[in-house]
Image (cartoon, rainbow, N blue to C red; front, side, top):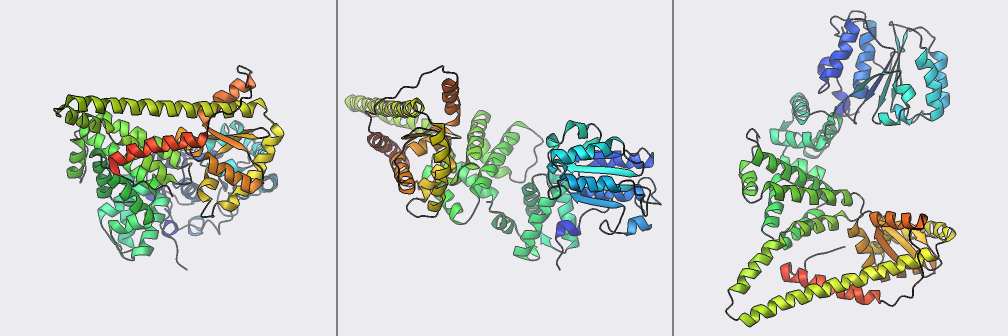
Length: 544
């Protein structure tokens, strides 16, 4: 059977461990100086070497011929695999997290080691233990037999009780640097006779995000796809990423205010199965690198030409602004079922429409007919006033629906509707209703009366999207529940204010008759947005 590369190349000695020099040196010195503790806690992100170091340390403390903290690989304790060594007991707390499992350990700790000096218990994902299991483990950690060592490993040390933490010698393992990952991947590729260029290894190293195991798994997957010769295109194809040149083109088109090209390219990438979340992450990294390129003298890159092009066209403040917008979008994308929309909106925000305004102003000033100038300015101001008026009507509508819901708030109705809305899941795959079903399920139902309901969303963008489709959402709820609810959405920040005012009675919510036609408001709002968008890049934005 084929053995995964991360298992095949798992380090067998501290010399082979990458990126954890401080931890390795401390543990090695503990063995050399015979200052071995009874309990250790290894904390750190996934794939950084916690379990690997625990296994090596377990072999080292029992090695009969270790010299200067090095495993001899000849004695009986070294030649046996951990699975065969009765003195090394491994337990995965993710699947064995109860009191009974820990009581079984407690019952056996007094048994003497079979081969070596110590009996070592390695408990992986220790934070998954129940409170009862932790309490059962505590007694043994307080008064362990001299021949027992506990090694606890966890990705979430804050979930481990302080009473356990205080009885362990704690080591915080860090993410492994891209350089260390690169060196290890290059070593593996040489051993496996894989033909691959350094640029491809760098990309895989970056995809590992500090986890050597994840990076090796990516390499394994790319090898399965491309066999023995790997190119950068293969890496991007397997991982749903795009090349640095593609990222450059997106940023360059954004600077050129060519939103139609950006949207079209995003659609192409999405249709090819590229991850728009990874694209957003790569854009942030790309812009960050340009800032370093602009501000530091020792920033080394093999893509000076594309970095210099962007660096010469954007200031540091502009780059930071774009990074902020993209980072906000990235947070939203991970919460939303259709992240492509959020990425498109981010690019719309990043386009420098002020440049267009300045250019238009220059064109107006060059027109000899002063009356035409005044007409254009007047139309622009009139359009702005219309938009403000429409937004005010929408805000009034939201306020009325919030008031009407909370004036007759019913906890019973809220619990009922929360349960019943699960039926909307049946329409997620329905071609006619899927987008509205997804909108409902992406939100949080917060308050219900006998005829009204308030939903909350993580961002204003998502709550606005809901409100712009209220009629269709209400029709779907009516179809599913055979009952009509008048719904409204607010963002979570606004909801927290509303909830506080309601609970503390800072504001009294009174019922009001609705005198605003939401369909007319949305129609006017969409018309204004459509006019603005078409004047810039035509009908090119797709939302499904």
